[in-house]
Image (cartoon, rainbow, N blue to C red; front, side):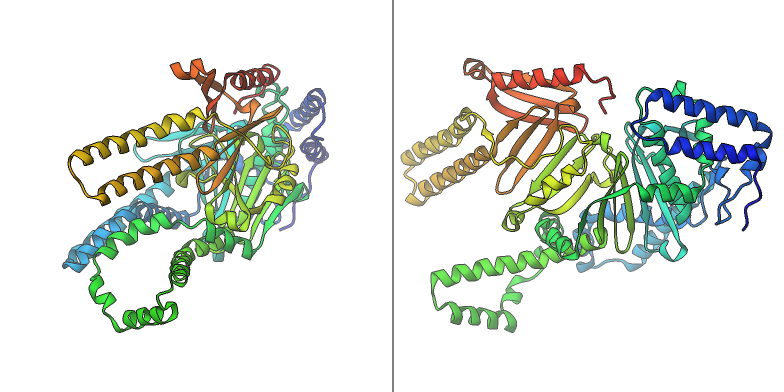
Length: 585
């Protein structure tokens, strides 16, 4: 569809808008304010042409200024609401799987099951239709407004400056229709603030890029408050050509890291959720008749082959057990590997202005955008299996309760990262406070008093039980069991103690902990909200303390560190905060 000709005022308006949108990041707030006021004057001079300008459409035929009017979602959003509700029901109902299986084995009434399922489906469908019918959204005066509700209308006004995450999803049932869902979350909400389902792909991308530009470009200068910006500024940004907005975002995109299919396979392997599999499979396995399983010809033949191969050799038997456990773990890992590939492939992490954006997904394509200034903590995790491959998982932690994927408490992550890659990845995100840097090579261990205070209890219990067993004339096996258990507990406490440590630098403090695996937490002094120091009587005498560092993403604890180090952490955090007037979030 051809665009109608524009008047000179409108041409000048659009040109001036583009100049404001493309204003250099290092421009002063005074220059930016003058540019905005000049643009606002153009808008005032051409007020009689507003309706004509609002009729301008992009090449897809969609009026760009319609976003300022209340918009309804496509009827296809009913499908999205239906699938989302059913997914939540089944995701949170995994615990009933053993119950259903047991009931099925003992005789399940099929008619009642079909009736209950049909009633549930009808109710969920009605709820999805009502939600679609009452949902409206628009952009207005530096905020995104959302209306919904059946009997009582609920209206959310989301300031653009509070937007924390923008996530674009394209489920498999929307791909043939070129539709997608835009999820917008803020710092301060407990749930997804805005869930715009079944948007046209181009419209969703345009709205996403527009929100990113408004949030992190036009309002990035802290000297410009909302009161300084003319009301027409939002209108001007919204009226920018969507293709120009998308092209500008593409031009400003800087690749940070890419992950291959093999990297994701490895990530799924070492990030295996074996515990959840055991929760589901355990009760089901309890229903099986294991005597029949072991007496089956296949099991007997396998056991006979093992005996022939090992020939009562303890070393070979040990190797066989290890190989068997590894095979079982690999079998269980298939679930995690497939999930990692479907969710993240092809994994891409890019930097756009002041945001980092992750994209990927085979069946359901996702695009997550996170403001760098919202990152509270960088967490480096290395499970025990990942240590064999020298791989880490990086998490960019945000305000607690407002993760990139809020429902699953999932932070934005980079999977399967080599130790040598960490420094280069952080170097490409210079906005992270404290600057870039590799993981510390070593750390200062916490005081040994932490260990001695904790091994006293198992030693005391073992001694008391030994005395009781002596007078009770228990067998030798009783005493062996007691002291074997005590030694195992003390060994676990010692391993935990050896993993505790810290590194204090000029702008950041690192915490190290773990058990068989390990993790580093990188805390920026300027993100600290509060510091709590706790001392017992013994710690006070030894000049030690518990230090709890409070962040918007949660607390980080440093146990049994010298009081001098605690005072240093307080002094550096206060020194940074006293010279920084920016919002702590």
